[in-house]
Length: 283
Image (cartoon, rainbow, N blue to C red; front, side):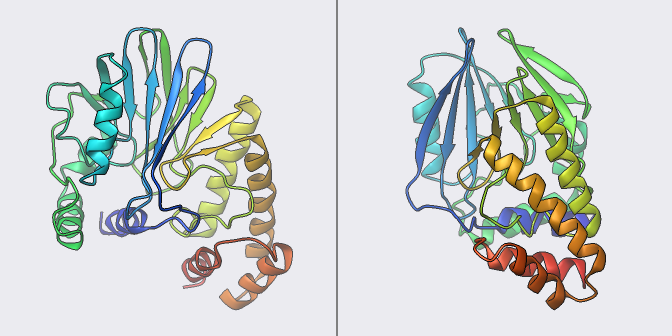
């Protein structure tokens, strides 16, 4: 549990290397639903999603920071449809704004959110951000297995265990058209040091990426940074992770690993992430 706490703490404290200062909403239209994406560019570059179907709304990963919560809730209210469900995959904070709405997550995340590790992490955030973050721990109304699925207003949400070890969150297939993961692929950027923390994590990230490609998704979501990516980003990520996998197999030191990665990707942004990955792999 201590290791999980350390992972979660690093993930929540990460600030996207490609974040922009201005928050924004964007939309993507599908046949039977509209995806609304809110890139907050707050202290942790959190991203939230609204799936708007004919009669209702589903929120995935709510906002947690004061100001951002109100902006997101105000936008949601203007859609003039009831919120059917708030689903938490990785970000179990910011939930007290939805007192009368069904709050759902996986059984593993529900257990983690009630653990001493989670209480310690949220307590740290409360102090670190001077009370600006909603860190209240709430009970979840629904708890799913990591490979369950549910349907709201004709839209199917298929939960899939992530291949990255140590995380209680899940990937989500949204109606067979959109794929959510904690980190969306990003062409031209090194992988997050909070995603790749071991050689096994490289394998896990690559497994999830190849699986997503085979499924034929064209839009990919993630909880940090810009929040959305396309097929070009995914194809680039697969090649990048395969390269990293080969280099990690042969490199014997962090410096050698960094040098070989920079040789292959000299223009790649996010040098601090690359250094962080190397530090974790060769600690």
